[in-house]
Length: 120
Image 1 (cartoon, rainbow, N blue to C red):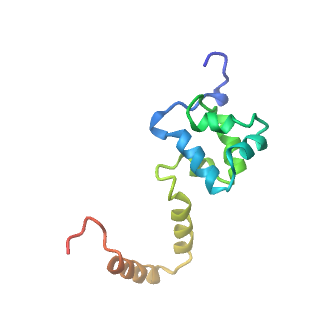
Image 2 (cartoon, rainbow, N blue to C red):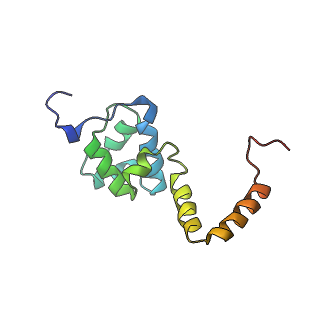
Image 3 (tube, rainbow, N blue to C red):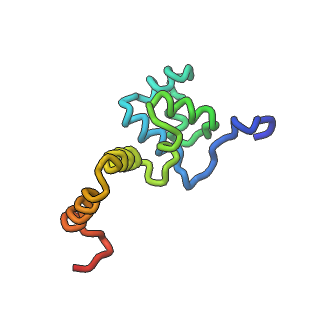
């Protein structure tokens, strides 16, 4: 990675599983690999090569992929990226509920969906 500026570094963290994240969000956006490649101005096989881990995308490439898939970098890099958008929608909805009503909602949800670590 010599001669790369700070912003255009390659994403190499294996724990992030960047290829799987690219495939997940590309599919979520309803884009084929060749279609996303074309939107990025790359060869037809560009996304395929990223998703098969033949080469690593740079940070700037990830930003462009996020833009084309209609997601944020926070969504892309979220620990629970497959549920991030749903969790954020729930959080936004809950913020509109008055505090007293939130307590009732918590009670209702706790009964309907008991925490996995609770014992019956």
